[in-house]
Image 1 (spheres, rainbow, N blue to C red):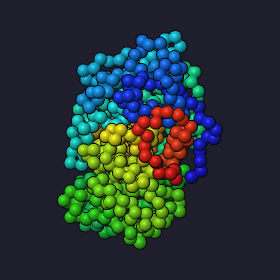
Image 2 (cartoon, rainbow, N blue to C red):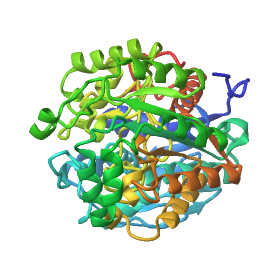
Image 3 (spheres, helix red, strand yellow):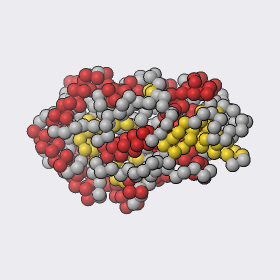
Image 4 (cartoon, one colour):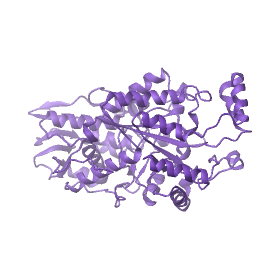
Length: 503
């Protein structure tokens, strides 16, 4: 991939941390500050508490800190993070202000003598949301999908508004307003945000005696003629060339994520719903060559229970690499099925098997950013108190959310997508799409591919989004992150193990 990084030394932000917070919560605080600064495009230099700084994180706002921005640290809140519940979020479009059950609500930021004093612990807020601290208290179904029906404020702040990215954007704007140096650009060619496209390849080969029943379940009696056409082999799901043609005409390319473990109807009925195709079959080997030669990405769609075994996960990755004739650096879990009790354990596996990026942090039923992060990032492992070396590229929209799951995402589908695109642009983020391989035929899936085409076309016409494959987005973000890290000093607690080399 051609480097889009700016040469020369990146601008530097000076950071000072209250010794009490550094002593008790150093890895967590360092990770949040790195997340903010690398997102914006700043290198950093950690300075002694009390020295002149751009950002000071202090438990005492009354102290006369020599800084542009002073953010209040609340150690008591950190100590009770596992018990806190987010109950209210407001302040849009300015500083997102989060309120927790039983906690006093912080007031707005206050200017004083050329500084800005923020009484809200934005470092804690970022950590709390981005590490999913509340998720263990949310109901889950048999697949581990969360039900957010009882958490409307959480859903609005986290999924719709991308609160973590919103906090980072507020910190960036505040430092600029206070005379801080302009950061490096986020995206290539001066683009404001990025759009990355992907297809989960679940059902490319129709089972002709089974699929007619699925058509009738979706469409009822009016689907009888279509069901007959499927039964007779007149309609199918093998639409890779069609997807490629549509995307190339729109100036885009995408990733296709393939399941390398072949499932069966018996396993499906027993609770392991893996796909039935064989990536080693000649038809798939020819397809892989076509995709790679055209600049499309071949990624792994880890099987339903891959998270339970590193050996199985590695075997699937190796099998797809052998069948496709090239490296596989990205993944998305089938059914989003990471360890339901400990998703971070699955994220840790991504690092262990050498993936450059994963794209599985999503709420199956809900449009938006699962952990409030609207840009790629390196997640944090609370149990190990360090970040993970595999980049997370969170999905914004899965097709089904605006069709079969429309009740969970009310309103006009196009208006919902437009709002999410506008929000991604406002945050300088990345809008990642997941549309399934089998929904191309508008007769079988009315409106699905049309909405996708409209989205990609409209975003392309805006002119402020970089259109790229997920692998290209990951390579850019990883290289940018590595450059900023190499030019920085301090904030080194909780750094990841060595990251795989950017491709």
